[in-house]
Length: 289
Image 1 (cartoon, rainbow, N blue to C red):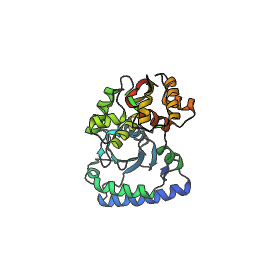
Image 2: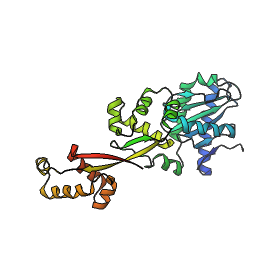
Image 3: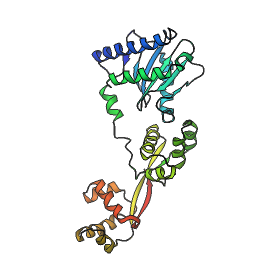
Image 4: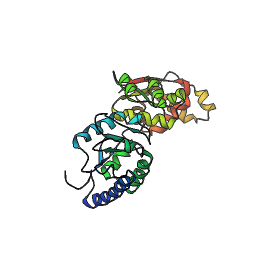
């Protein structure tokens, strides 16, 4: 490797800015450790294990191992925590934000770094604030590929549940959510069942979805009857009662909400609202996809 740091996706000017910022970060850390980390290598990774920044002292072999570790274990590592992924390699890994990890590799023991965890986290957070992500990483972190809605239902891929339980560590909320995933409960139902806040449930499920652990269970509405009187009492106009009767034909338990919305030419969220008015008159049939 060259003497220059690498910022994946960044241009030359951007790399120079990041390199200078990281040198200051590293200098402060070395000073706090009384020079015991002079030969320290640093690496920043996102939650998908992709290398955002790595300096020349970080081993490429170790890099692959750390990247795989982050991809596999990141849901179980809360912000502010640290872990030593391999007892045989002097590397320590901190989760410094919702989206970022910092790994440090030394020639000898990582013990001095453990004792300075609060300082490391403070310096890392300042560094991240000054650092702008390359567009490809920034877009990826904000991507909608793994958006999760409260009404959606998930199940584990075959033989994945036991593996996930063993890999998620000690976070009780994570374990509660994992154990509640049964292919029948919606995200909202899991939140109510476990007592875990809805936003945290969504985060945990998104993490598992990104790992490839979950499969989304497609929910297909089945309307057995349309109670016109009930709809009129609810304030639904007569013309919309006719729409519900048309809905009954399409909502036969074989089509997803999106497929029905497309067939009717109406907005997906509006259709979800229309179906919610029917309440228990709608039976939801799962279709894995």
